[in-house]
Length: 267
Image 1 (cartoon, helix red, strand yellow):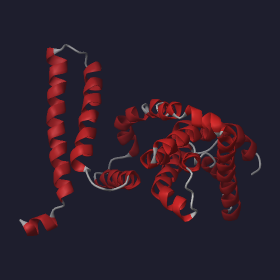
Image 2: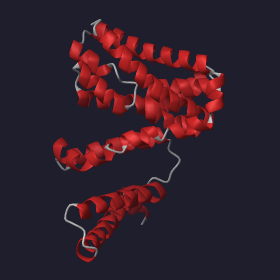
Image 3: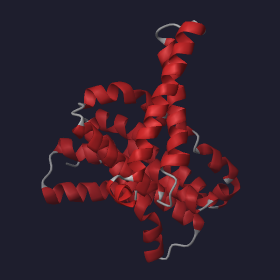
Image 4: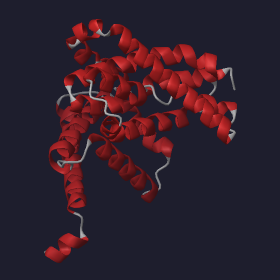
């Protein structure tokens, strides 16, 4: 058994078991909804997909990925596993997106829900309003100017330049900015995700290196540079950090919408 455990990854075994059980449960739910509850052929799969997603999420959270890895590391590993599966089974993006696109619809309401911790810290926001706005504006300008400098140094085209401009704002806003400016939306989404994952993983390290100890400053820095994915890390650090990071997402998105067209005309 010890030799077998060395050869077969325990996580992979759990993954297969959970996948099989989830398939059986979802098949049973589909049968009950369609045959016993009388739901239509369109509504039954939709309800089944939602319940199946919840069951799969809870199984992965409390059984499969119950470890000490940070959120950024788990997200990075999940992305890598999805890519490996798509390549191994030769699944094209259109086929994958046909089933996964429904999850994207939850992106906007999930971003809106970040206003809850901000409401709980509204008095702190009023007290430091000027400093907070100045910090977010500095973060947005730094992001845009870094993209501009990088594109000039590496000789990128205008299309590539505007594709990278919204890299530090949430995907829901960044996609619209990129499309409006004539960028490549799919690459914009990828860049935004990479920025968020990198920010999530490096947030605490950067704060320690530069000795950033003020909770408000930490939250603003994380939210303005790595949007919602970074905000997850900010919430893990503390309530104030999470609230300020949530605010930075919204304000940074609005400022980028205003400033991006201006800077797009420079190059």
